[in-house]
Length: 195
Image 1 (cartoon, one colour):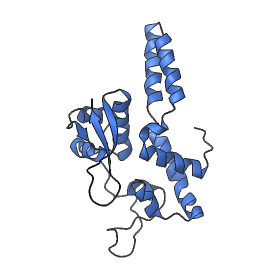
Image 2 (cartoon, one colour):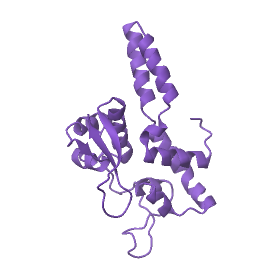
Image 3 (cartoon, rainbow, N blue to C red):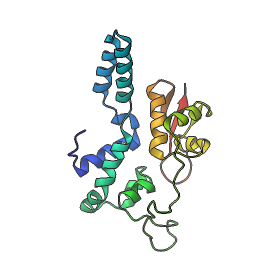
Image 4 (cartoon, one colour):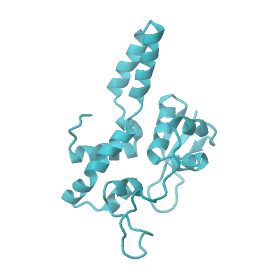
């Protein structure tokens, strides 16, 4: 993706990624990387081709999120889109706060307060993708991203999502779509199944 991303493109790409993480994977790049891996004869060439294939299979969640954060507020202001519309589509308050939206404290319990920045705001424990993947394979057969984060003891939403995306790309898990048994407000979380 080019560095010159329009606000609309940045918002569209992030929302598509939130809805379906595999939508951000460039399938042409994956096909090309798989062909290079299959054609590599030398062990070192095969190693580099395997690394390139793994990179191609995984979307750059941090870059997609960073572009959304850089453009979402201006796009929303220009198009008259309220913050709640982003929430309905699954954008977390953390990402909305980073994008410059004012997140109400306690939802509906008085006037909105500005979102707290990283100066003193509690953050999810930093857990690497490899550790999240190790915890994921110990989960019950079906699980959600938030259940994985809870069991792992933290991990940012983007890192947890990346870990599960890698398991899906490796054929060790499958995306089953929205949880059909979801009750209550908000959008149903995506359900994953171990293979």
